[in-house]
Length: 298
Image 1 (tube, rainbow, N blue to C red):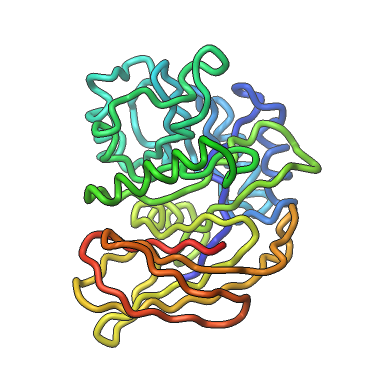
Image 2 (cartoon, rainbow, N blue to C red; image 1 turned 90 degrees about the vertical axis):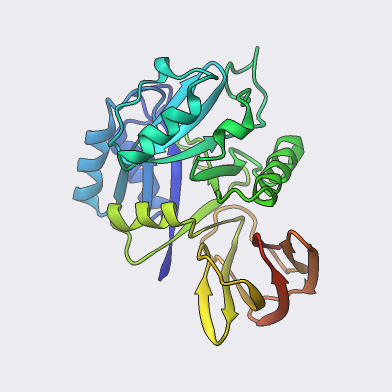
């Protein structure tokens, strides 16, 4: 399995973005993406143009939409579902998510703790979170300065809470890309583990939870149980697990590259294991858990 650089939350002139579908594809290639999803607000008007441009230029474009409701937003990737945003309510949101998934789409909870009304109606998620636990992905980071600020902290803690309750929901980053942004502030990447950068394989990677999010650090993370290696997103047998980690700088990361690493945190339902971390130096730890295991590097 290889990890591919993806951006899963983008907009064009078909909704409130400043780039045409073709310009978005060109800019994504300039930024080194292997795949993007076009998720305009409540419309797929620009999707086929973006897919066509992607095929011509060598970029995988995933068909998508952003359900932009009054109580929260969702990015829905795959282009197969028949769910209309105006039919989604706080009472039926869980069944609408299941409907989209049953037809083959991937559903992510978008920027759930961002400022909402009156600045951005629906940007803050006001749905009962227990009704959203069937979603595939959760935007732990979003927009500019993704890993900083109150919203980022709240999103991270809410994601950990969902994992702790037994919900299998993968972390993604949503740039919420609207503008060309030649000189952007700090932002992040989502890496998706897949056999190739094809639409089918990237969707399968998202569905399996083979994702990690990063601001300039490439991560190699494996778990070893009974002599067998498991990669990110895999379900592990319960028992003593060895976690193997190594890190590299992403050399073409377009904001400030991290000069050094300080620590790695392995979090499970039993607590946090802290290890010193350096670039190009493998670190290992033996842990045991029964619910979930996440890794963060600082």
